[in-house]
Length: 132
Image (cartoon, rainbow, N blue to C red; front, side, top):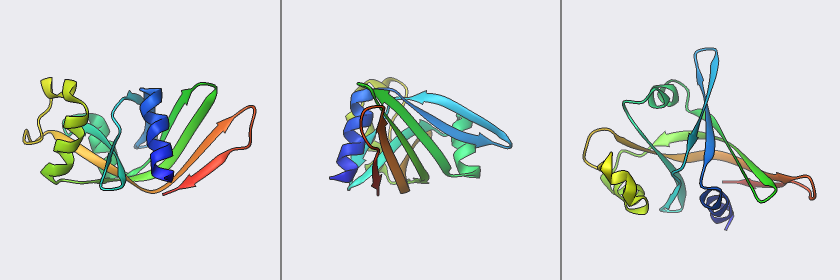
């Protein structure tokens, strides 16, 4: 249930922001992919992108999204899942990405969130902390 609440929040927000570290410089960029596969939350990128290299160097990331007066912050480690099934599940959930990605293209990369702590906050209620 906890993973589902985080998934639902990110899915409804449509855009979230992923923060990584690039040496001593923080990097933040918008993302839109989130998928639940085998009970874990996944995101997707391309191996040719700088974000892929940043995650490889330091898998600790933060994710932030805002919707309907609430925001979520997720601190986690991203772990690559190199199985074709995991990549296919993500692309099946986002068929519009198939114009740029394929589960067998050698570029599509999916990561699941590990040791995650998600905090849902607002100005009107106490924060909700979800660990998964």
